[in-house]
Every structure is written in C-alpha cells, then in structure tokens.
Image (tube, one colour):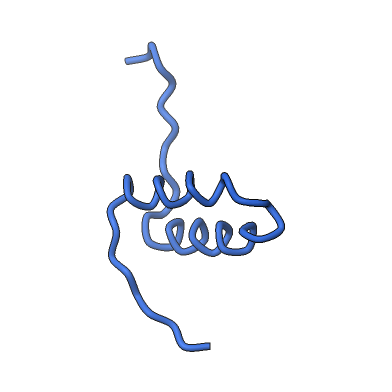
Length: 54
C-alpha cells in the first residue's frame, strides 16, 4: 500500500482522533492505533502533570 506523510498540529490530531472515536470501533481501531503509535514515536513519552500541584 502506498503511504503519504502528513504534518499536523497536536490539536488537529486530537480532533481527528475525536472524530474517529464517533465511528464504529471495528472500523477505526487499527487506524487510531497507528496514529497513536506514530505520535508516540515522534513525541516520546509525555509527563503527566496533576492539577493543583506546583
């Protein structure tokens, strides 16, 4: 399968994932996993910041 590379902001990716989340799971779970895997590879692990601390 031919592939392309897209450059999107984090809010744009989150919007795409939100829209995909409204579709039937069986149709989109692999695509969501691919998006998340590629994002993790590029961004690395993100620290979790608890609200109310600092």
